[in-house]
Image (cartoon, rainbow, N blue to C red; front, side, top):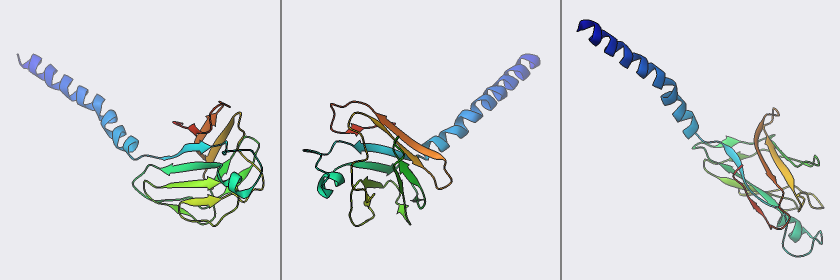
Length: 154
């Protein structure tokens, strides 16, 4: 009887140890991340190249964490190697920022690429967000030329 009780206790201990990595992995998954949540790649109307038209083309970046993230020196790029580099900037916890293609005055919610022509291809493209050290933190790819924008779950 003691042998059976000892085996049962040992089995229970092994089962708890087996579950320990699962329990410790859950909090890191709950911390969140930074994602590209949406790309509006086909601005309304004709592609005239006007600043208003260029600024209706944008990428929205979402901080899903509960803490602010400094994006200074981070880059956003497309497949044709157009690169936007964040200047001094801090994205609030659970905050969003749109990076517009055209010209404008930077605010906490809107940043401007200062580009004079369209960046995001209407037929498909890929956005990549990298840290200042070059580590890829988020990507988003789209390829449907019939949509006006891509709501991403990348």
